[in-house]
Image 1: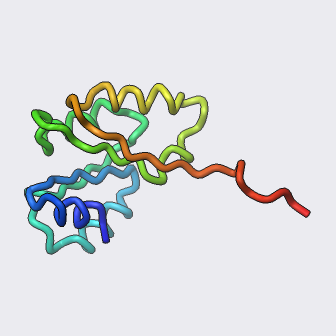
Image 2: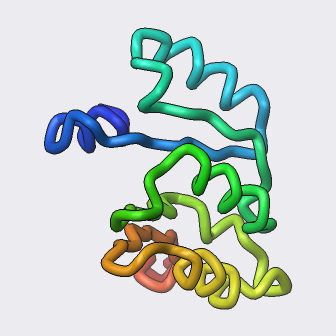
Length: 116
């Protein structure tokens, strides 16, 4: 299932804003999720490395008067060290309403077996 399906199974009024910088990804998402109520699922073409526009859209699409969840799944391993990923995540988290949650996954090579 997609993120909004899981969220709305628990809380039917949940709203989700998907963000990607690839217009092809967003076109596929819109086509695949066409049966979803427009008010509850949104799509934003934006660069996650620039939190300003993403947060502005999130404040418009979501109720920042209540806690929200920020899902950074399979994203940070694409963020170069030069973009300061820790500071980037901090900018997002600092902008969230009190009581909000961060969901994060991050790929790593550290647990790969040594080459033989």
